[in-house]
Image (tube, rainbow, N blue to C red; front, side, top):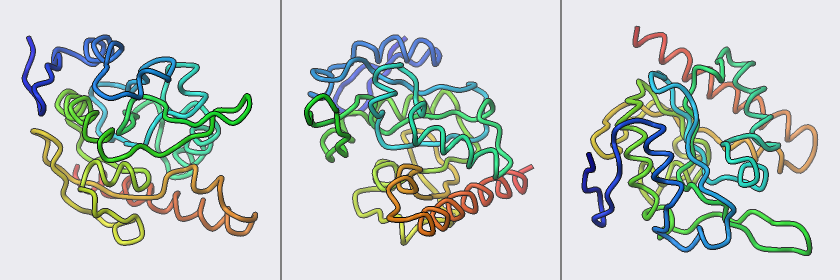
Length: 213
């Protein structure tokens, strides 16, 4: 069964594996032309907590899994330190293809633009429809923009419990920085401060989930 989403794109709604299989052939924006593959979300369909990041990075593009590069490893540590098991979380990105610029042999990440975020939104809506999380955590500005609109600023929203609408899903959301922001910090003191803030925001998500019963 298919359902018409924005822009007339048919999205298979049967299951997460079905969505991932359909997304593997996605050509809704030009990012597919250079990326190695679609990197779909991963995690249990019954997950109460969903984390939404920006885009896959170089490691994710090569392995086909979300959050497996340096930022993903840091996120794993932050999840552990805030009392969250990664195996019980659904992890995805607002945009499913790696966007980059070539610099010699390196592929340097570039943030997606609004057109690319909007083109990929039907996949995000479909993931929300299947998982139906009790709470979502947005990681960084791109994810927040995808969920709350282009005026989103992390500094104005982080750590706050808000309401978000993603397709047919309506529920609670907490915003924080993307783990890559910790890696980009200028020195060890700034990194420690940024990491502590990330863990604190994730702990807010834990306590919020606990209060939901």
